[in-house]
Amino acid sequence: MAPFVCPDHDCICTRVHQGIVSHGYSTKAEVRDVDTTSEALVSACRFHLDFSQWAAVVEDPAELELLAADLIDTMVQTASQHPTGTVLHMTFDRPTSTWLYTTVTT
Image: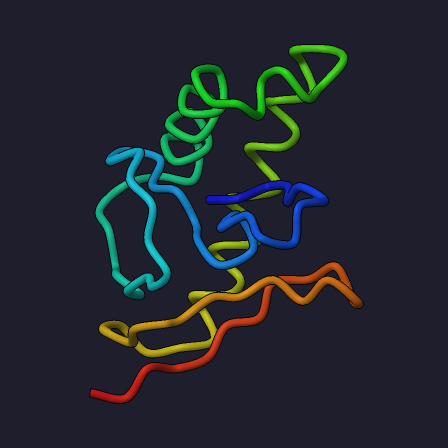
């Protein structure tokens, strides 16, 4: 997950998300139906943000809770638009400041 992107146009942060469990980077994500709650996902995301570079960006640590909730909400909304098993490729569109997701055909 990438809540922010830096101003460096050569940085990979505009082409990848970071896993909240794996902490690895990927240019693709698979839509999955997971046996968990929104609260558990937000908690995992919050824990991830605590130990990432994003923790240094916010002025108040409580902002991380809101950021985690927003990130998970956005991910759930994005995933809900695609059937389970769909692989999505993500890129950040700087002019609109939004993430774009395209379906990867296999």
